[in-house]
Amino acid sequence: MKELTGRSPMKSPGAPSLRRDVERLFWREIAKGLTSEEAALAVGASQAAGSRWFRDRGGMPSFMLTPVTGRYLSFPEREEIAVLKAQGAGVREIARRLGRDPSTVSRELRRNAATRGGKLDYRASVAQWKAELLARRPKTAKLVVNERLREYVQERLSGQVRRPDGTPVSGPVAAPWKGRNKPRRQDRRWATAWSPEQISHRLTVDFPDDESMRISHEAIYQALYVQSRGALKRELVACLRTGRALRVPRSRTRQRATGHVTPEVMISERPVEIEDRAVPGHWEGDLIIGTDRSAIGTLVERTTRFTMLLHLPRMQGYGFEPRVKNGPALTGYGAEAMREALTARMATMPDELRRSLTWDRGKELAQHTQLRIDTGIAVYFADPHSPWQRGTNENTNGLLRQYFPKGTDLSRWSAEDIEAVAATLNARPRKTLGWKTPAEAFNEQLTSLQHAGVASTG
Image (cartoon, rainbow, N blue to C red; front, side, top):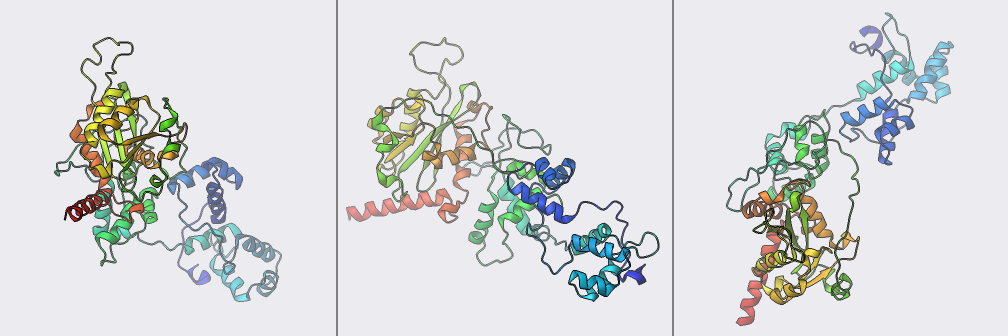
């Protein structure tokens, strides 16, 4: 057979799998938003095949979605070759009808023919299977051969959370990864959790002269999601913000608005200068809620994306004293407790860095008038059902949910633990900051204010 075909023996194909062009059409349907089952039916494949394709490739197509060029024989052309050959047509006749060179047809009949019967028997399905098998050019992933780069990526994905003094924080005990999406309303392991895009662009900052320390964010995603890449452990997908086992489009999150505010403090009354983020000192805030009426306050500076977290422990008597109508809330994020926590935190900021605060419509900020008197910060509230008006804070809360998932008790974490999480977020590079970290950008603002103060007094 080697003498007949001109190539080394190949394993028997058995029942040839579905053609590569069918799978290519399948991924095009996936790109339109169809599920794997719906996309498989749309291209004439079984639902099981669609699920297998999607699962094996981690939700990512492992080859280009564009069709192959006319340089290569297509499956319809191979079917026509098989029919014409069965009718007794010669090589030149087949080539003339296909518009191909006779040597192309001759090589196809010889190299891609089936050899199971001890002779060359051309069948289109087997020929297509052989051509696709030989067309594969497996390439070793960069993270496999570059150990230093792999360790850098893994450390930024799954590194340990530390307090500002460098002391490690163990965080909650999470259930072992089972190959599924992140568990709902359960603890997740605390990790450094940089996104692949942050890791990719930060490499150019940390290693400006080392071209070997370069990798695209898509290559990192492939190493995580595609089983055949084998560079990173699959369970590291749990360190991504979404925690999805497969790469799928994001689902919309439900938004709700609560509380009532007066027209004088609506976001429409906010100065226009706040919108362009050119002037620092404008903050956005909200709460992330846990079980048993536990919560953590979040504050994000709009210009630098610097994050501060408010520890809101339950007040004395919670769970024991009976509820008093119109009395103070004992949950830790009542109006009085919230005002005191914000006042204490904002008092540490220079006057130039506490210009305004835009909050959700929650009643926890019902004492905003007193807060303005105590701190001098102007308070505004977003419109109902308009989370995009506080987009920076909403995005930050999404990041924090990786450390404080929904359905968990947030009151168990100390102020030091919460501060460690805030320091972790502030040490992650941001694309919008030119891949600086929020801590670096915030320190630059503080330094510029100090220099301006020295210049003015001089």
